Image 1: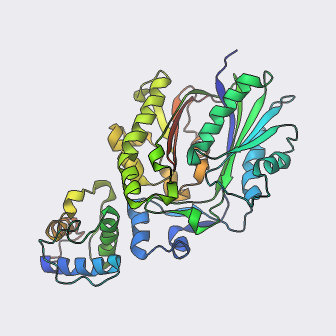
Image 2: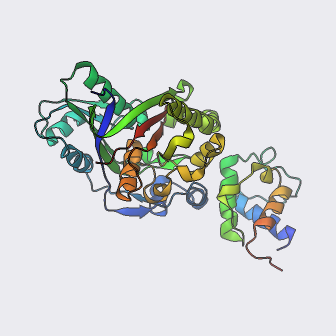
Length: 316
Length: 86
């Protein structure tokens, strides 16, 4: 039996309420010219943002749908809640345990991962595979869950980068299953940018200057680690940070812009650790993922971690 | 549109972005060194210019060399005008 990590079902959830970035500009303290830059240069337009949706109302629907793909008689050993912002709930709420109970997975081990910020979800899939191989009974599963709300202007605006939005996703993971096969996962952490949202102006500028180069290198390293060349890749399934960062990265890579799925940047904006999976489900629903073809899931987390995972899609 | 009209529009756009009056600009004034703009405030100034005059910025083809001075910015604005203005 193959020992590769496999992605058995990916689901996502978006609140119905859609607003334009102009609608949140006042609460974020953005001047008209700043909104203009986000709209015209950064390519943002709409986002899902519903202050009336509770965290678990946001997280659980996608998780339930992914869990529905669990084969009869099989068991979920781990529920891993991957999120970007460290404080997503009051301190007396154990979010991972609450999600586990909400899903009725009472015997599973539940924990959260957050320190890779928006790469935490890819990191959680990698970790799920390692745990399943290392200590779980054969045929066991893990459920990776994402979802967080832009609950305050402090966590909604990344100055000069992104306007964050609400979304959730889930991925049912096993080892050696019939789903998408994980071929490689590469991360690079640049600790000099650990201050994240608290970076100085000089650090922010420095991060902006290396962003495209490092992200391009990490994508290429992941492709190389999968034994492939970038020509073998059908599509990069990216995070939705903004168009400027991706234009810069694509230019640094000398790559074909058509290989990067950026349609959702204008529709959903950046949804913390969920983007990659929201974009995956959009592509799957549009029948744009081909059996046996290679895709690179990519995200960058403030702090700063760059991550890329190469998968081989299998239709099922 | 004449060059001095563009310079006037740049003064107004900069006044909006920097939130203080900017007057008496000449084409020799350097945006980064003399006015202490950064790449972000340059972009905001372009958006303010789009709102004020008949110019459309192409986000796919921005070159910071176009924004070295008020003079090079004026050249850029005139090259991006959606109509000839004649």
